[in-house]
Length: 419
Ligand SMILES: Cc1ncc(COP(=O)(O)O)c(C=O)c1O
Image (cartoon, rainbow, N blue to C red; front, side, top):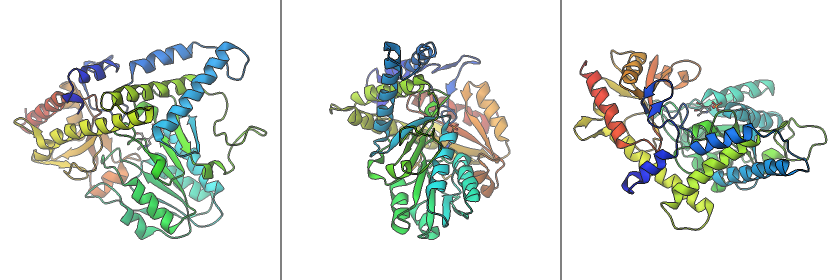
């Protein structure tokens, strides 16, 4: 675990900006990582440097060569991070825009007819793209219902709704509301078994900061990331498309080289800041493995991150010292159940007799930043079936500490005691 290695947690935290203080509100514990993870200091430096470079790609001068080298390195780091077999990585406007582009390309590229299939667990970035392009292409948009009690969806749930005429299928890798991860390999395999020709698009946005991504053994066609939720910055999204999806016709300049996904001049700094993230994971992984190779170290970092976060979530649910965990506070209802298994980075809850906004404000006054999710178009798919108007979301990353969790639990105990 990161905390067990002498000096490592300090070394980790020193690499991030605004770890224990907000530039606007002062000292605070950051438990709003599902809204946007902390950003690496290296990302800030790289962004500033690239913002100052005037040169464009494709010119015969050293600055242009440097831009193209940064883009090439960023692309290969994106592919390495995903461990993607072939296909193309590309940068878009945001995670949402990348998902719309992947879904649109799949829906327009798939043979006519058939159906599109997603699940009720999805973030609207994915389900809205599926709904829109199902409507435009004249296909029914079918939904696999997720399980309200566990807050997840399984391969068996998909099996019940699958038919050979599924043209496009969508999967959310982890829910930003329930915090539950799905068995992506099993769901994708089930879809392939029944509908081998389906194009499968995955929203990896909530999962990506909580452990390694490894698409090498998972047969899908599209995967989306939001760099600001994985230690980089706002302003771009990252997509991966399989060779099969890349073969579909899509928006491109007439005469442009085949296989391209990007439109117009890209910000070379976005690629460079993704490389900063991979450099960081490479360094973190090197603390846990002596294996050679950047991918092996990224995978080791993913395992270390998952193990550390598991202990944070265990403490949050079960307690630390004599502080009761959230699972033991009377009147507190955990979204997706109290189990630790299959939980990634998020604990959401509703408190009987208290508005979630009140809880968020109480914790904020104690210097603990969390977030309220409402039963609106973002989280209503999860909260409405539970009869909840809102919930409080606490979200961690690997740079959070057990001490920070203890402060949250102490504040929650005081709130529950009516302090
Ligand atoms: C699971 C998931 N998908 C998609 C999105 C949208 O990503 P972006 O803000 O990059 O458009 C979010 C943002 O919260 C998310 O959590």
